[in-house]
Image (cartoon, rainbow, N blue to C red; front, side):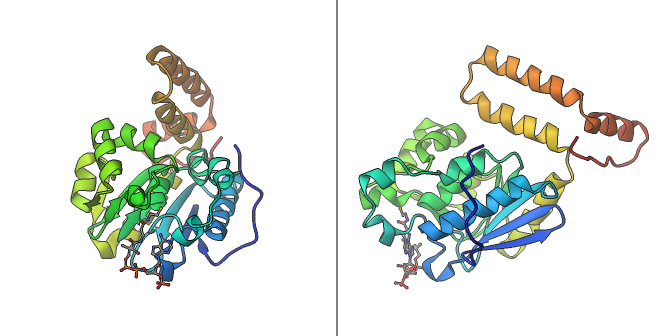
Length: 263
Ligand code: COA
């Protein structure tokens, strides 16, 4: 995968470990966690660490303060050149999406623009009751270009994607749930807890099989039906050769919980 060279540790992204879960939290609350270049670098570096550390099996992403993320840093946008925008060296969305480990996003407060686009690249998104999400880019004379125009229609359908991005309309948690933007809504004070519970659950799963699931599902949007089925069958062959498959089947027969080693 195309991971950028890790940058120095930065307090713009808090990095904590909880067992096999790496918990990353956007930490620029005074600017509503707006994504500026140092923060993007810090997040990419932390994701790289998650990828290369075999002890990490899942990632949880949250935001400090009252909001998850207000999108791209508009002050930086002011001076962004055509070259910087068109040929950015490492796209954060593809770094997130190409991670071989599941990424859970716990989204609260304002989740706007690039913040929501980043979340679209996560594996699982849950929202708190105070979630307010949308793509206001058009109001700034631009449009969602951190993968938004590609991932949003796959999630919510073309009609809704066009309506949301052309109007820059903000949706609340219940609407986000109804249209499939998020998969679960939880009480605001329970969001992190529930995000961590899901991340821990995924961290206990069979890593090779889960990686195969993520690759197959992601590719379903790109491949034709026959190629998709063929790809699925090939990865199934690989997964059937893992020690985790033996462990999963034996554990079931012995009526005990499985212990997956990722092999
Ligand atoms: N980029 C840079 N700074 C941002 C920002 C962004 N996307 N969003 C918020 N901030 C900064 C504000 O400039 C302000 O800084 P200041 O205190 O130095 O003036 C601070 O964060 C608080 O913002 P404020 O607007 O006062 O907070 P709020 O709680 O009243 O409103 C938002 C929150 C998110 C609704 C509002 O800040 C907003 O609309 N932000 C822009 C969202 C957007 O268009 N995103 C797409 C970017 S492409």
